[in-house]
Length: 341
Image 1: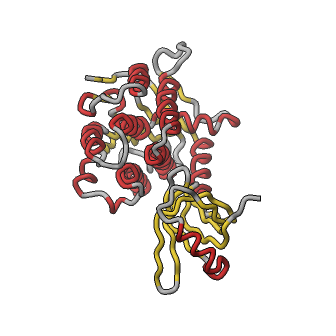
Image 2: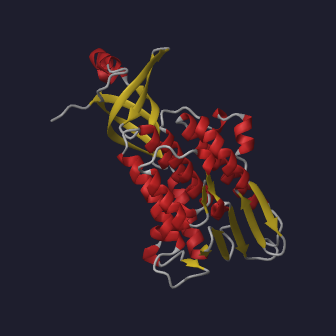
Image 3: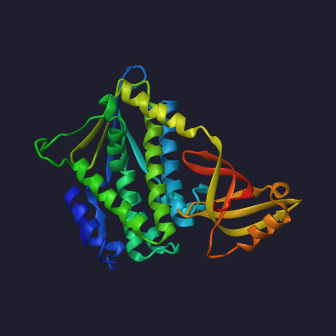
């Protein structure tokens, strides 16, 4: 039984996973990551232990991002509608709000227990070891371990978001640094593997968890101070400048940009309907999306060359206009086949 009770034990566990594919889900418990506290201090008329609309919306968005992260692990797509009601119920987080000041407590115990069952049962082309690593990454990110160091790294230049340990402050390695190393180790294993689905899952889990916490920060962005406590002794303290930076970054990510680009793609399928041609493509990094084909610009030969690549082990380079949001391809129209110069 791996009953993990601190950051060092978690890092040792991840290092063991790199070479041991036989660790079973049922024998892993992330005890010290089971609770996250978000304490909000500000206007007493607004933050007094009650739940206002903004906080309620932030909690809902947090839960939605957790579901989206699991949906992407399960299906390769972050659509909540692809989850069963049983999965959504089991992965639902219990939130409690303390009276006096507004302190939101997220109890992750039931979700972690359900995670082990669902991650084990999903058939998505991953090995047992890759699933356990993905499950571990899920626990790390949902508990706030990753977003803390990312906020710190992103705001160093203006000395924002200091992470402080309430105990053992003199230690060279804080709990947050050890948790960061654990996640980066998982990330490195995924990037070095030949399994695109594994890589995509780790990336999407990181992205959705960061957005979950950013949505909470946006919901209380008028507060004087927000303190996020997780693990055994890690606190992320955010004041007005930090909160505004997080909100501004989130708003910028949500704006879609459309630019010309050339992508090296696998073609997984083609659909013809009412004179329109749609391809189902996959990048070298494993991101999947559908795109329109401009048959007038490509001509018959170009269209046929693309169709001939369906299920081919070789890629084809296509050029066109790519619409991205938060770094992900949302829409594309290809009008040319790129050739090597």
